[in-house]
Length: 180
Image (cartoon, rainbow, N blue to C red; front, side):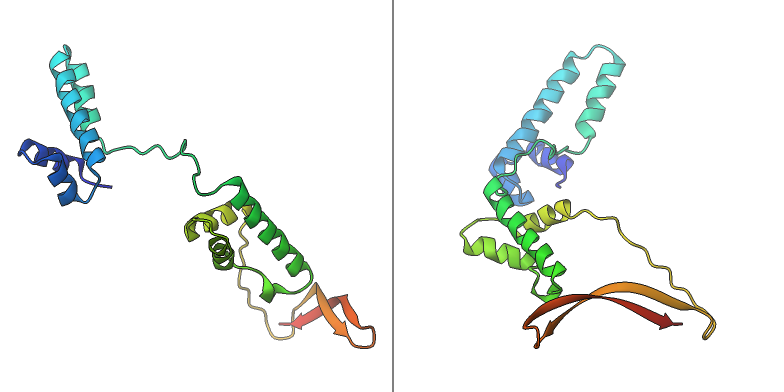
């Protein structure tokens, strides 16, 4: 975000578009766009006949720039990239089900995989896509305190064990009691 008023002040002082762009660290086409917009608003202000029209033009000219990011096309996040990320996330789900949570690929690992396959994509884009895909309800935990030996908790869970005698992994259901 830049200061549109400063841009116009520099223009009115006689600075060139290139000088303004360099001084404000913005692109020259952006400077040209807002200078044209300012000149058009001056013309519209001269043509305006009622006070309401003049007020509307002044309000519009003093408003901050608006960016329409809704209709932007995703340039780097192509269907091919999306599919690679989807495959990685599906493999992650399989690994979680098998109890191999430490082997799950993180967003950083997925990004590095894409870079190694010569895709020019940012880490932030990968994170955003994964977050959109994995939108979950956030859980809240309330810390509770109980008197000693007056309460217990019970929970079910799964555990994956490798048993030498069987020569394979087996999943078992377990129940766990916790005294407070």
